[in-house]
Amino acid sequence: PSFGTNVTGTGDSLDKRMAANETDETLTNRQGHPVKDNQNVRTVGNRGPTTLENYDFLEKVSHFDRERIPERVVHGRGAGAHGYFESYGKVGDKDISEYTRAKVFTNTDVKTPVFVRFSTVIHGTHSPETLRDPRGFAVKFYTEDGNWDLVGNNLKIFFIRDPLKFPDMVHAFKPDPVTNRQSMERFFDFVSQSPEATHMITFLFSPWGIPANYRNMQGSGVHAYKWVNEQGKGVLVKYHWEPVQGIKNLTQDEADAVQADNFNHATQDLYEAIEKGDFPEWELYVQIMEDGEHTELDFDPLDPTKLWYKDQFPWHKVGKMVLNKNPENYFAEVEQAAFGTGVLVDGLDFSDDKLLQGRTFSYSDTQRHRVGANYLQLPINAPKKRVATNQRDGQMAYHVDSPPSNNPHINYEPSVIGGLKEAGKTGKEHTPHVSGELKGEAIDRPNNFGQAGETFRRLAEWEKEELISNLSGALADVHSAVREQMIKNVTEADADYGKRLSEAIKKERDSMEEKSSEAVEEASERSQPSDPY
Ligand code: HEM
Image (cartoon, rainbow, N blue to C red; front, side):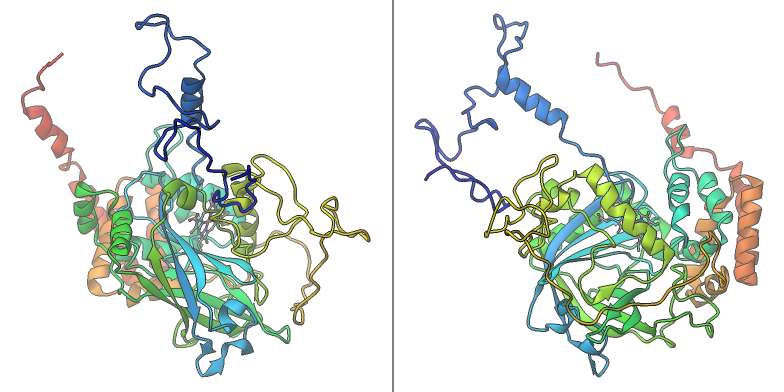
């Protein structure tokens, strides 16, 4: 074959010519030089010193030195899989096009390819998958109109509603900057001063805070988004994923037992199920609300700390996702995958949820740093359709996004002598009217405790017991001001919740002195290790 240039972005068309002494298995360096000896560095004599012209060694070790990219600032630990999504084309008995013109939903003949990354949030890339933490549930739909990312979690609500608070929240939840250990005092210091988090904490410290694995957990877009139809009419919409495999959560004791044996159990479970053809499935449900402030509700429909209760806003089943293929390379596909809430297609839109809008800046910003300026040219992130932009160059630019065939010199627009042209608008635009004073102010209907109390009351008794036990365990040893504020917050949510927590904390504190680190004591009673050195 002649020398080719790789224009597909997949690496497939790289020239495969071989030197005379090569076979398919011959190791080469990245310059295409066959590696003659991969066991011995070049040295003066066979005892060294080594010399600096050792190109193969320098190339190998310097690439190795750069193997890590920055880990995600949150959601560092994850597992991914490929699959497809099929729309049922209906919302109840209505055609889905009454609500949205997005082809991923209106076109029921296609199986839209998807890539999903599940994750835990707070701890790093190789942390245990048994920790109490929300789980990420991020789906990239490679639709015929370009990519759509639905970047959700397993729980249906979030800790906070204002994006300005997110970096502080994450700092409080991540390990202490001095001791490098997560501290419940710092965690609850933030949470107790952010009363809107009471609802999320109620879920998180119940068994819902430790899903048994990824296949048996739900997913949710959390925010209200919008669907826009052909007439430009928008409705508010919330998305939820239901696992066809059923839902399973772990108690703290069950999670401890799993962790003692295996801290990668969720990654293993997903991978092995797919390898043996037991493909996990989720059905997608939506809840729909007319756009507007809905002053009849005791909460703001754009508030991501709130549920839209099913009896008022029914769940409509709109499609199904099947995961049927494991990644071939974890780093290329899972680690470099980049999802963002700004990645929407025609017929899907944002709502005015402040948290959602804050997120929309943050994702692509961090990805330009974490993966690089050309992260969208990587196969896992690139749409599975034509891409033709006037964006050029930058670190690791791999190819030109479809240079205009009429004139490759024109990488700007407008032009009369060639180049790419705008597509023009499709469908009537959704043009909500917004006006008001520009200000930094909390929303009018925070209702920080109402749904938290309702969620407590809706838990089964064993889940309530777990919640109280987990919360009291975490709060027993924190600063008294933090503890008292937490008791006050949950009492506001539900008097029984508060009473049970307060009593459990007292009991826990009374028994704390007796509980010293028994395992370490036992170990120190054993004879000392030998000295094989
Ligand atoms: C990951 C920011 C709230 C779900 C991330 C990342 C950032 C971030 C910077 C790392 C992305 C990357 O490196 O590729 C924020 C900010 C938030 C926020 C600023 C609030 C203002 C949320 C909420 C959810 C969520 C409410 C759930 C609905 C996720 C998920 C990932 C993630 C699932 C991992 C995506 C993946 O698997 O690559 N977030 N986040 N985040 N976030 Fe958020």
